[in-house]
Length: 229
Ligand code: DC
Image (cartoon, rainbow, N blue to C red; front, side, top):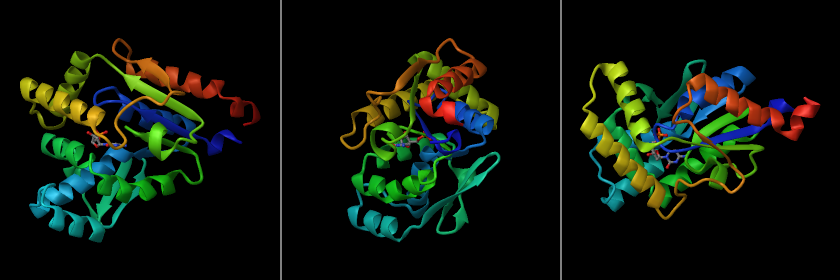
């Protein structure tokens, strides 16, 4: 197998650095970047906008079944569309974050998004990030990475990210939201956040982004298929 065809997956909790790192690694390799959290966020946003709660089973199922979730790659990341509408600009806020974590525990949502994600990896040449990339979506991935960092450091990063985006960010609220999401993502029955047994763990607590990118590239370069590329 050639390097151009590898599937590289990066799993980890919020604030572990996986989005920034995955994007940069994809750029360095000339691969596509797949942000699977954005797909869950798009479903969450669609439900919030329609005023439907996840426990309103009938309406929830109807709107989910009818929704067409798709994405487009762009040099800056990914655009996500719901029924043709670009919803990307609405996905990165605390309300959508919490709702995405809640609805991602529902099997119907995961089943809906599974084929969308798998289609993206069909031809390889992809860096996919999420929670269950290695354990469920791409168990065939040649390179499996699990990024983690201390909780306080992850809260600090999330706070800085939100403050940089819109100047807002109540530290205590962000901390509570991140802890709640972590708990939900790790304890749900279907596809919980957990490392694949073959994953290479990287603790990013005291590392810069560049150092993490270098560490991930070093793992990729150790893969046997590199010899033939
Ligand atoms: O990576 P993120 O923070 O954008 O993801 C938002 C939520 O979506 C996260 O709290 C859990 C869910 N998610 C998931 O269950 N599985 C994935 N592969 C990606 C995200």
